Every structure is written in structure tokens, then in C-alpha cells.
Image (cartoon, rainbow, N blue to C red; front, side, top):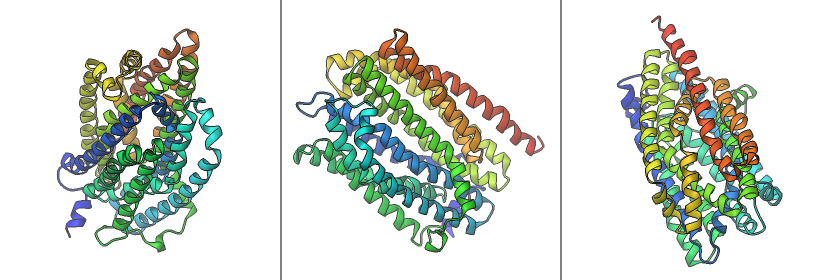
Amino acid sequence: MPAVDKGDFSQGSVSRAILRLVVPMTLAQLVNVLYSLISKIYLARLPGVEHLALSGVGVTLPIIYIIMSVAALCGSGGGPLFAIARGKGDDDEAERIMGNAFTMLLFSGIVMTILVLIFRRPLLFLFGASGDTFDFASEYLTFYSLGSLFVIITLGMNAFINAQGFGRIAMLTVVIGAVVNLVLEPIFIFVFGMGVRGAALSTVIAQFCSAIWVMRFLTGKKAILRLKLSRMKLSAKRVRRILTMGLPGFTMITTTSLSQIIANVMLQTHGGDMYIGIMSIINALREVIIMPIFGLERGASPVISFNFGANKFERVRRAIKFKVSVTVLYATFAWIMVMLFPDTIMRIFSNDPELIAAGVPALRVYFAMFIFMSLQMASQGIFLGLGRAKNAIFFALLRKAILVVPLMLILPTLGMGTFGVFVAEPISQVIGGLACFGTMYFVVYKKLLRRDGI
């Protein structure tokens, strides 16, 4: 059957198998990121509020990261285990992993919605909101949290579509949400005059549409392995395995949230609301730049996991070589563009001369060592694909929790002010990137050579 052939990553060209998943997922992320950019532009240009709406939404970002981390805990944990089980030919176990992951996502989505609604006020002030930006932040987060369940199901379960080789279907999951957002957001924001509430409401509706799409496919006849009620009963052993494997993705996102919280607080202390707005722009740009790297990760991970489960170590090595090479080449190109055209990039979001004057040097500093960061992103994905959760967790903690957070707390107090917040990122990228890639190469890649007797 064609569907089975599509899901068998142990045959044919490794690079072609990866690209078959990478291209649609990257296109999907491109659409999604373009939506995110346009959303930031809308908010930055709301009449009468200057940069306050953008800064207010920027304060909510750590909480949104936490919601996404819950999806990563089950999706990035269950996806590789699901693919490894398929590579071993154990379809029953693969279905049970997917069913357990869905139950965990459902429960987590309900809990997260309740917690965010209850604690949103103290959290927003703790994370950097001011008296001027709190109302914008609270309005956005209140509406967004009502759709947390849809966000978590969409992000978490789409991993199981991609792990079966249906790159185009996984692409449409993202595209559907982004297109719905693109259509509804300007209507809600400007025509209905809802402002930031409109931006959040359009996101909730979009994620609901994406969640319906994911569930219809995974329970339908076109899926190789389907989501079944009989496979949703939780098993303590499977839950532990999913959580263990998902911890790296969860840790990466939660430490990003932590670093964003510290950044917002320190920027508010040493610069004010405008600098939180600048960081919000930088975060939006970062989403654009890393989008192809994430697309490559989503394409390479199922191929690496499947072949590792099938003991096809030569194909695993080829997948690693291809992934790292393409990641670094792309990162070099992106770095050149940011270094050459920072002013043009800032003007896409705002024409405020003061914001642009402060934002251009911040942008250059933040991305100064992005090439090293790409080494860490590629290597952590390889650790996950091979089931080496401890390695991925350690390096996620090393860069964000051990390096970035202390640096952002210390450097501004040494007379560097807001510049110290931004310069913490490139320092961590160099140290974290080299350490992570070096470990992957000498501990993992060399070990694969030995396992083949080479």
C-alpha cells in the first residue's frame, strides 16, 4: 500500500526521505511565522497606544511558552518513541504510545486553562507587566488561555502525523491555523475594534480548526496507525517513558520561558516598556529565522528514530551528516542577512525613531553568534531522535538556565544596562553550541561508527 511505503524510512535515499518531510513542514512554518510577524505589526501600529500593546503581548510570551512546553512534553516525548516502535515493527506499542500521549495532552490542557485563568494577574506583574501594559497583557492572555486545550492538542498530536511520514498533512495542520488567523485577526482587531483581544480570539479559533483537522486525520482511514479509544488507557510505564523522552523539549521551552521572564524584568528595570517591545520584535524575528531549522528537525527526527529502531546505523549517520550540514549552511546565510540589514528589519515592525535607534544594536548583539546556536539546535534534535533524553535535557539547561539567566541578572548590574540583557544570548550560544555539538559528535556519532564495526 502506498501509505505504508511512505512511512517506511529504511528504504531509498536518506536525504530525500528527510526532505519529503522537511519541505512541507518548512512551508507550513513559513506561513505560520508570516502570520506571527503580521500580528506583531498590527499590534505595533494600533492607533493611540504606541508600543504599549506590543509590549503587553510580549509580557504574555513566557506563559504561552509554558503552555507550549506541555505540548512538547507529550508530543516530542511520544513522537520519537512512536517512530522507534514502528521501526521495530511493533505497531501495537506505537498505537498505545500515541493513545497515552493524547490522554496526557487532554488532561494537561484542561489543567493549564484553569491555572492560567486563576493566576494570570500576579503572573503578569511578576513577568514584567507595568501599570501601562497590564490591561493589554491581561486581555490577550484571558482569551488565549481559553484555547489552551486546542493549542496543546494541535502541537502535541501533530508529531504523530509527521512520524508516520505524512508531511503534507502535518503541514496543513499549521497552514489551516495560520490562514484562519490571517483572515480573522485584522477583522477582529480593526473592524470590530477588539484590539489585543481580537488577536487572541482569532488565535483560539484558528487553533480549534487545527485541532479538529489533526483529530479527524488520526482517527480516519488514511492514517497508517490510528488514534483509538482502546489505546488511551494510561500505563505507568508508558507515561514515564513519554515524560522522560519529552523532558528535553519541555525543558528547552520552559527554560526559554524563564529566560524571557528574566529578560522582561531586567529590561523593565533598566530600560522600560520600550525595551520589552524591542525584545518582542527580536522574538518574532527569531521565530522567522529558526523556522527552517525547526522544519528540518521535524523532517529528520522521524527518519533518525525509525532507522535507529531498525538498527540501520549507516542510514542514521547519513541523516545526521545531512541535518547538521544543512542547518549550519542556512544559519550562516541568516546571520549575514541580520548583520547587513538590521535597520530594514526593525522598520518592518515600527517607524518609531527612538525604538529603531535602540533596537538596531540590540538586534545585532542578540544574533551575533547565531551560527553556534544552530549547532546546538541540530545536536539536541539528534539526541532526541536517538532516545538520549538526558543529553538533550542537560544542554537545554546549560544554555538557558545555567548561562543565560545568570548572565542577564549579573551583566546589567555591572553598568551594562539593557545591553547586558541582550549580550547574554551570544555568550551562551558560543559555549552551549560548542559543548552540545562536541558531545554529540564524540559520544554519539563515534559510537554509531563502532556499532557498525567501522
